[in-house]
Image 1 (tube, rainbow over the protein chains, first blue to last red):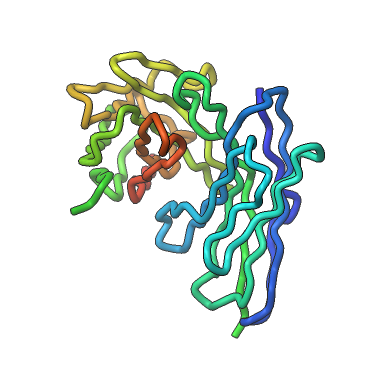
Image 2: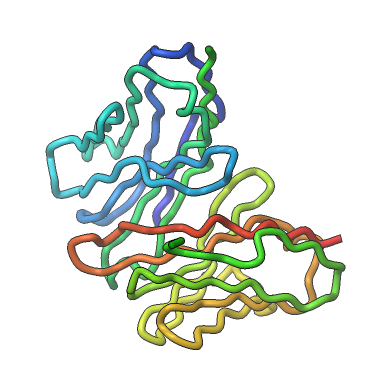
Length: 117
Length: 114
């Protein structure tokens, strides 16, 4: 079974700063997918970014980028030029693609990110 | 149009009652899921349903049963509700192929058992 660990329950930074959220995972699989999801107070789950383990290049989406270290089983999320709207819970998630992903996502416990004006 | 819709958004009910939460997706996705988010915000998968194949998380009590009348719907039925069932329940869907892992979540149903 896979496990996902987010060691930062809460983080707070000033607007426009850069912040990095950490995530580590444990798996015996060689091929898998990793995700960061954002959950604002509206409670909607929003996909921020995803990474396929077989790709060495780190994924980026505008102000969001990841540092994927496969050997270390680390998958951190960097948010550049943080904005007030980035305030949310952020969840790291793992997926085993075998069976078409029918096992679903394994989530970490989340990091509550607060962007201060 | 909402891609994954859940009803109701809020549900307050007494212990011992039976209730259902409905979920519909209009994305043509192959697989649908139910997740539970507890009071500490921890999300855990309960079920996945794909081409009439049901995969159950072994920790889910058998009071919970998913029902899928067709590919676009996966409803969650809960018997004999308990206080510990209070949580937010999310429906989600995904597609195989190149977009594998592209989950779309509903907006959640907050269930409160009193």
